[in-house]
Length: 377
Image 1 (spheres, rainbow, N blue to C red):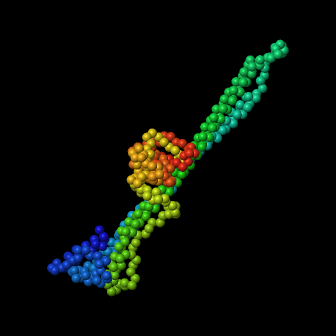
Image 2: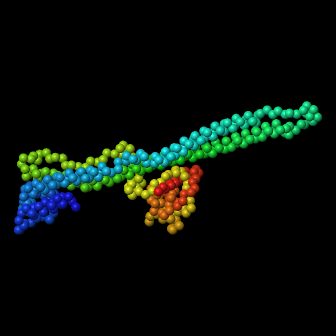
């Protein structure tokens, strides 16, 4: 209900109680806007049986109610999220990936140290001098003496073989450690990219919610200026000692000032169309340039009639619509058991794959334009 009608209904009740009811006509809805001047309002109220005191009470009530309304609406605005926590979005994942990456680098250095040691041992063992304990007459009695039968040779060769095997194992461990470091760096980069997306989405969500709250507050207080002015003019008309030359400023809600990070965020249409934080579903981690697949994959296509699967209806690829990642995430949220999505989003045409169990991933160059997003509860 409009506050003006509510207040005027209360005043009408007061007027009715203050004067005789015989032949008295009280308007059902009294509205300041109905009267061109404060004088015409007072005259109308007087004809309806009201007194100057009733008119003054109405004006005072209007002024107080406007102040209360503005305070209430300002409180609602101030309570909206300002994005102070946006910078922390995804940072747990970044810190976790950073820890694993640091541990992998440390492990690689340690294994490289072991490999260097085993290499030196191998060089020493395989270039060691071999002493033969053979009598001179034995050597002179045979043109080709078989040194491989000597224990000293057998021991030296065994030591060399063991050192070589240890070196090979150490080198293999280094190669595995390098792969772990590479994967750790990729996971870290993905975590940083995901955190940046979460932060951006948070900023855009705050901007959207603040804009909605500002619109609601502005609409709720839209009639205040006119009512405020009329109420003060009524008071001025009733009390000659009060000047009407300069009226007090009408209280108004003030828009909340957001941080530069939030204010300067460039939001895509998908982010603008995304549900508010209280409506949002699961979050998704992007694995850029990655093909992911699993058991029960289902391909979705956009048509004039909306999303459909190729299994349900034959669709010419020329007629496919363009999926955004946000639209495909929504499709995944609405598909029972979906844990990941994959697609060639925001291009001339794109398919959206919903995946019940994302179990396999590939970074082959052929999939450079394909993105995979893994859902989390």
